Image (cartoon, rainbow, N blue to C red; front, side):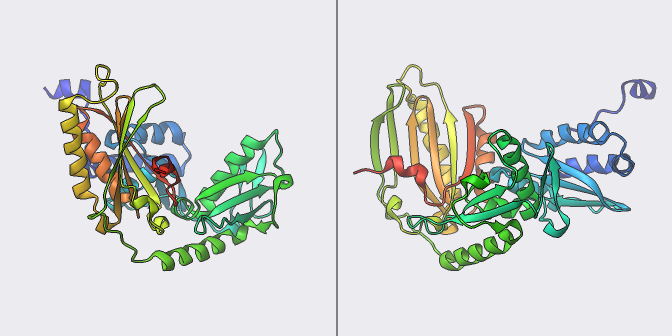
Length: 364
């Protein structure tokens, strides 16, 4: 029997939990350490082994590695700026064991601009050739809308400059601050600039100041949806099928929208081919039960405002406006796992500080 085991090798334990992953990592860490320290084809000998193990946990994990110092390898796990994956990266790193010679970091950390720059596609991105200015809008006073200018941008190299600038900012500001503190970002050329250019080195201080103002303005803001009335809206979808929306139109008129800047939407796809895109009775009841279950977990007193739902063309979308994206990420992911045998389920979380994506539900 032992001979057969040697032939076929040891069967690896499936990765179903954070502890499973870290147990596997500890079994291989010495090999990975030597690969990174000695630059022994890191892609093949480390990343190609790491990637499928992370994928067994869930999609959405990305990674970087390098030497933190002469005797320590740093593994940075990142969500690549996707809000709905942030909490899972943070949780995985929180449960990392202490391993001699290793440093585990959740999300790309901020870099000191004096010692930071990147080279990409033949262009440099650093404090010498990047500038910014802020756009202000009376109707959206809390919106952080930034234009970034690279000295060498032209129409011909626009894509390369945009990609390099985003990567620079992601590393200069740090992944979390880049996601949280900038609402809209546009990379433009010098010729397109409409305001005085500010050195990019001052961007961090500007964002810190704006974020402090924002927190002071909205700290402690709560909204109670208990007594709100929901409107039933009927329309025709692009396909010609009936569209039915149930929306908290009273909430749409709230003047403190920016306090809940994250929109969480979960989409359920069902077979509506025999019912003009609407769910049949069984699916309708099941969808309502799932929706009620989500609403019991995402409460307005905790900063999660139920906006309503839209049903059409074999899909139901359920919407929340949120103070933060971590809990909705976990609730939606668990909902997806619990019901993927009944419906095809997708979800997304995006920033929309003034809920402009809900303007279509306004009634005259």
